[in-house]
Length: 238
Image (cartoon, rainbow, N blue to C red; front, side, top):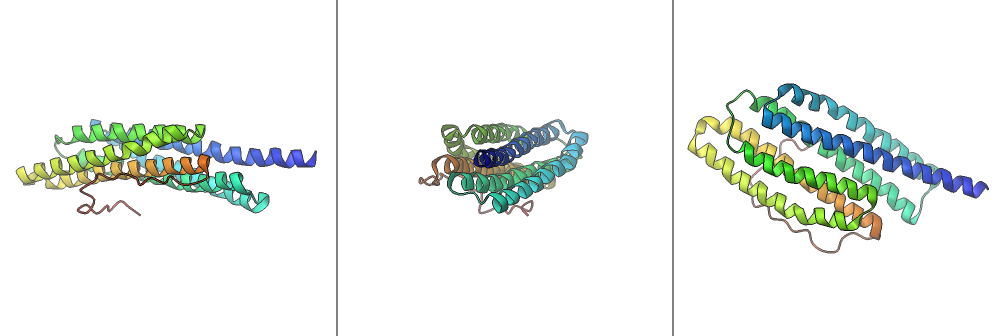
């Protein structure tokens, strides 16, 4: 009976980790969707709410860190259980970064709302749709332990890179044709970079899902198609 009790308690500890990841993921999805909406609709009030809401994700990450640390110290998990615990820690960190990038998009949307609308914003919306889909699908894959869905997210990372490169060129063209747009276009460049980084983090989570289920990391090299990465330095990266 004692062994059954310990096993049940251990399972509950691991379930708590999954529950926190699910809550963090849900908040990050909302933050990202709201940040993009704030940018497209030039809604500074919504952007401010996104910026303030980032603290909730940070608090959940701290809660998961505490739960995982306690699990490691008290349960001393091995094999599959250790993999669940370590993966949860790494996934929480990536979700927190997704929340940070959503916050950064919201901050830039506040500045952009003070300037005339720019044509490339429509292209930003297309890229955001792709990245939001990747984020949702990979979080679903984590909860369901769905390797196929995770692998599909990895495959779409190249599409996100291509869109980022295309946007980079489009925005640079705007800047050259009308130097008055340079400041606003620079903010859009970094919004695009933030979205590209969110796609990268979604792909990183997909690789963690693969590791979580299979016990080994993916063996194939991730395809990268971003030709602009060497020219854009991301100031929003901590």
